[in-house]
Amino acid sequence: MTEQQAIIQTSQLVKQNSLRMACLQAVQSLDLPQGMIGAGFLRNLIWDALHHYPCATLLNDVDVVYFDPTDTCRAKENKLAKMLKMKVPEANWEVRNQARMHHRHGHQPYTSVFDGVRRWVELPTCVAVWLQNNELAYYAPYGLQQNWQKTIMINPAFPRAAVFRTRIEQKGWCRQWPALSVIWPEQEC
Image (cartoon, rainbow, N blue to C red):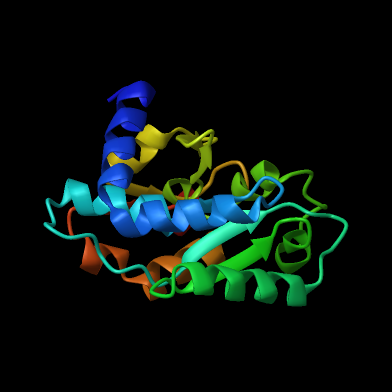
C-alpha cells in the first residue's frame, strides 16, 4: 500500500465514523494552536478495519494535542477538556499541550506539536489528524501506511524499550486485534 492509498482509505474510515467527525469538528472549533487528535483515534480505527470489525472499537480516550508555550499550565488543558466534553459528551477527552510534555519524558523541549507526536513510543501511535478548511489533514512522520501493516514497532528514532514493553503488555492490543504482531526491539530478543 502506498502512502496515498493509506491516506485515502483512512479518510474514508474517518468520514464514515460520526463520533470521530464530531470530535474533529469540536477540536477545530476551539482553534487551538497546532490542534489535532492523535494516537488511538486513527490507529484503532485502522486496526478495526484490518480485522473487519463491523463497528469501531470504543475509544478509551480522545488524545488532543496542541502547542502553546505561553501557557503550559495543566489547568488550561483541563479547561479545554471540559469545553470539548460539552461539545461531544460521549468522548473521554484527554488534552495535552506538547509545549510541556518534554518534562514528562525527559526530552529536550519540543519545538511544535509535530515534534512531540514524532516522539511517541510506537510507530502506529505516531499519527494525528485535524480538520483544515473542512478537509482531513494528517501528520504521520513515519508514514500512515505503517498503521496498515498489522505490526507494532518501537519508534526507532526515539526508542524507549522499557516503556514499549510495558505499553504492549498493558494495552492488550494483540488480544483486541489478534492479527497484529509485535516487532520487539533487538535488545529485547
